[in-house]
Length: 39
Image (tube, rainbow, N blue to C red; front, side):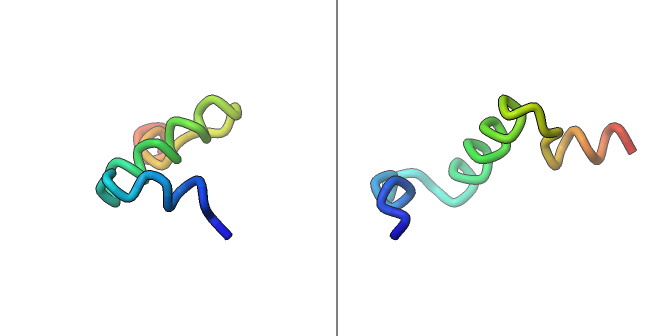
C-alpha cells in the first residue's frame, strides 16, 4: 500500500506531482518539464 503518499492527503494532486518530479530530478533522471525544455 502507498501509505506514504496517502499520508499527504492534504496535498493536492499537483503538489504530489511536483514532489515526484523533484524526487526524480534528485535521482539523476530528468523531470517531465526538463524533458520538454531539453527537447
